[in-house]
Image (spheres, rainbow, N blue to C red):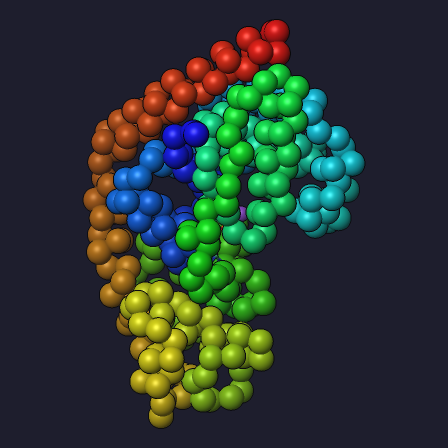
Length: 298
Ligand code: ADP
Ligand code: NA
């Protein structure tokens, strides 16, 4: 059996927002606190600037590319969606899932917390493990979903278009609460969040996605369940309820924001954390790559 190793990452495409915090960062903290196995957290800048930091990612990506087919990659929803709006499709967009599989395999990751939108990507990684192990001998564990990290309220939605997820790469900053937002900014964004013409506070994501999203955010910020939240909001209209949600979010983010500001002032400390982390990562990556290149006869 393989030593437990959880791998997760985030793209450096903007400032963290509430969705990133509740959907990823807070879960990573729980995983780290549990201290059962290694937790490798990465900034996946390779995918956003397509330039290697730890070069073994690209090398392994190349090897894995020869173990899958273009037909398989054409069917990835992310590729289909993004390529439809482009006149010229970058090769990087097409091979992205293979690089992502290389990220996972390079660290012999056993567990990967993924959202629903990433399930197909993890399937590709699993398929590539089978293909590699069959051809060259058992080298990689089959990466599994980390189910516990997926549970919860699901996706936090955009404050402006509750049909879409809150995203740090969306051009409208008012569509998200960033963890660096001041209390006034938080109040203003939540006050202007899109709701509907019904004033009652009720949880109905299907028909009333705007107010339901606020209830989800409120629930995550306070650890109260939705039923209690809705009960306590009886008698408030959505406008009044927004003020309650804003104060809950402000209270939740206050210590996080303070810590973040402190860290942003400690550049040397941060550079050290990154340097130590990438040295550890590189040790594992170099070892795996050495094994892979030996097996494939490079
Ligand atoms: P973004 O779309 O904001 O750029 P990323 O794609 O970099 O976010 O995702 C980083 C992490 O944050 C992933 O684990 C992802 O599942 C989580 N995440 C992103 N957006 C949301 C959201 N709206 N709700 C919950 N989790 C989210
Ligand atoms: Na993104």
